[in-house]
Image 1 (tube, rainbow, N blue to C red):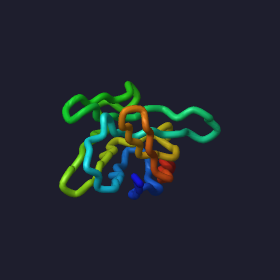
Image 2 (image 1 turned 180 degrees about the vertical axis):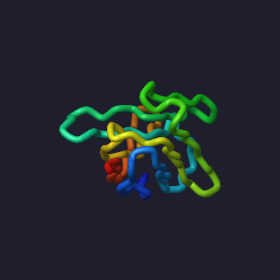
Image 3 (image 1 turned 60 degrees about the vertical axis):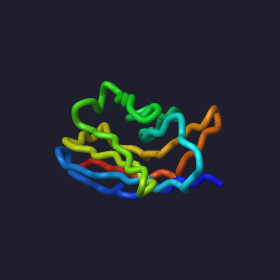
Image 4 (image 1 turned 90 degrees about the vertical axis):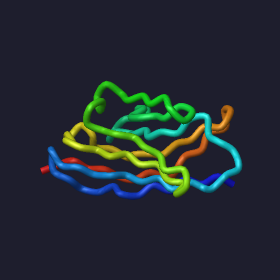
Length: 116
């Protein structure tokens, strides 16, 4: 069974940085895509933050482009999200997600709070 476990969330002041990690189960196949999504307080929908499609294509939402960096270390079965210049509107629960031919996997989420 594929499992994803996020860590690294916390409370940070505006302008600060955090680095999220997502450790995923070692599998004998390659995910079609892996990425980070977030759910803001009071919102029902999750917003795509950053995604790696295949091994090379990276996409960011307009709201985080230039501030966040997604990366993946396959030997360590870990995906990261480096978040810099954080803003209050970045507050939310961040989820690690993976997709394999339509099968979706996600972690339990990690809370990020940006506040004075």
